[in-house]
Image (cartoon, rainbow, N blue to C red; front, side, top):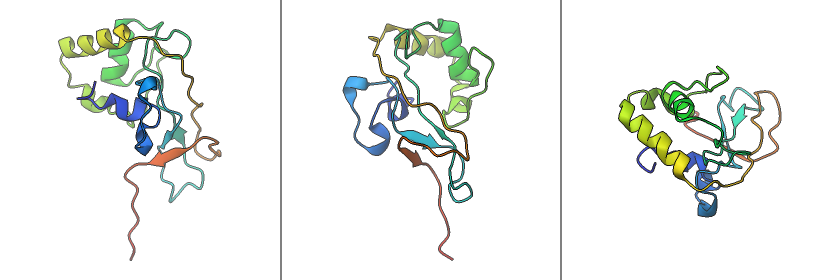
Amino acid sequence: MKLLGCGICHTDGALVGDPNYSLNLAGSSVGIAYTNPMVDKYPGVIYPSNITPDVETGIGSWSESEIIRLLCSGEASHDSQLLAVMPWPTYAWLTDSDALAIATYLRSLPPVKHRVPENVPAGRVATSPYVHFGVYQSRK
């Protein structure tokens, strides 16, 4: 999981350089803005989910095939498409055996109960903290 960088987003505090390893892969209370804050006064924000096998707040009720589908296609079990903030387009290149190994590993982790904030659509005020990735403005 370190190779794929999952903990950078899915571990509380890691997005701001202060990871709480007792919540490793249990989701983040710091979100990621997915729309341009230079255009949107209130950008859309997603909060990385809990990917431990906790049934209530994580992926504990997911099958290996559902995890693999999400990982490699960005499609959740309810047919919604994830934003490319999660780099599933890159993970689509995983071999079947590597994707299965990741799903098996995630299901083998100890479950951690940790609820993350709800995602916020663009135009609404986020009440939990968030960061921006790759947003730059010319000084000219």
